[in-house]
Image (cartoon, rainbow, N blue to C red; front, side, top):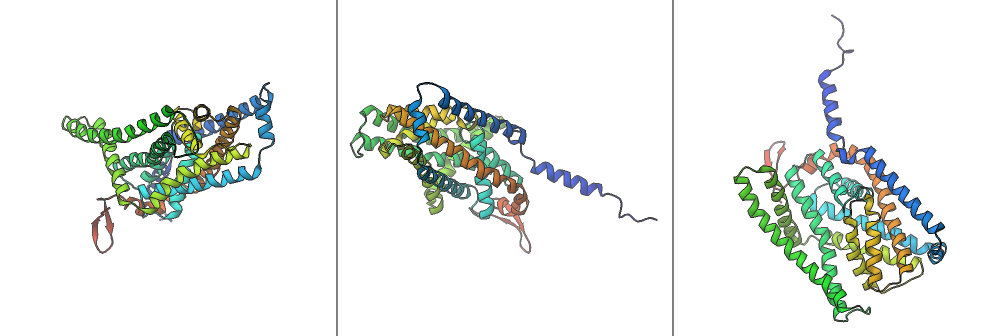
Length: 373
């Protein structure tokens, strides 16, 4: 009988194909779609540059760009990198503190890169993170709850910032002066958003139990993820993990200071309190479903900051400079991180799958062990 060494192992081939399928990104994150979004962003950038260069009446804006201060722009880039580092701290603190730092950085920066090129307020990044964690063995329900918690926690500093700044502007705590309505209305709406989110979370928990009893499982699962995410967000805040809290504050603060540096780069220095509240409100334009929020965020920021009294020319230059940094830095860092992320997932599978409280893992010599938080 001849040797069997030259015959391919069909079982091994099928296992290899299965592993490749498991590590393949979902359709919304495939290379073709991301490439189209990147091309769209580049075309939008070229169009904006052409408008600034060629359209009459924009001489002041062209002058600001021609005399931009490179030192302030470099500071803005550094601040954006620090904001990304804080994002990684939040990702790790919410999803898995046992995860290796290298993998935390790879997934966190990949999420930021996805947010820079995919539409709708951070949903692209969360989808990429959910894919990575699922491929590494984390249970889908846990990912869903923690994704809701992550979104809520990263929104907390924004909402609290509007409340504090609005109240401070209303009572004259800051040097800037705005109308009482511009100070108080955003603060009141932000406070209502916090109370409303908690109330909706409790309603969702009760509604989920009723729907589960009626066997409407899909809608019940959505409500369960939302209510569980609200509870886990509150629980994580009560724990007071220093790295998580540092990440939440730094992710927002460093990004706002990129806009502050952009103002200085183009020859303007408005009150910092106005930059902050204008940023916090204007960034809501990012919810418009276009790649990277391009157009929506710019209009939101410019409109809000001008409404708060900063001149249009200075604001337009600063916002365009800020957005160039806010898109380019995460896109570059995310592209590098994503190239090595898939190779890391298989090695990290056990550590990530062990991050779910109440989950069961097999430990040699001990058998099945149930995990606590």
